[in-house]
Image 1 (spheres, rainbow, N blue to C red):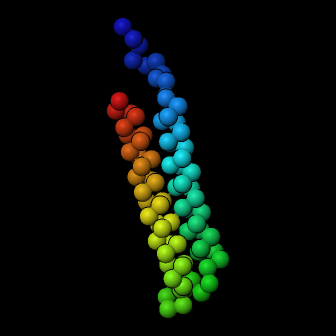
Image 2: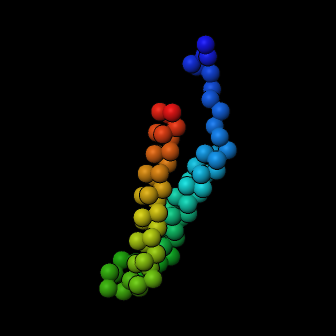
Amino acid sequence: MANENSPQSIPATFKTVFFVVVALTVLSFLGIAVLALFGDQGTNEAQIGMFQRSFYTACSFGWQAGLGAILGLIGGKVTS
């Protein structure tokens, strides 16, 4: 009978996927931070360029989806 408190081994594929998701999430956070710090006229809605809007939308989706994926991966690993 196996000890229930013994640590389980984590497969290399899970580690790879997890670290890629974390890296993409961090990059999305950094993209929003860079846009917030260095964006042109970021406070005036009429002067924000189309590229900056698209970039913000992509980064916003990236960190939200990444955070959800991280929680899903951890939750799935805990239950298995």
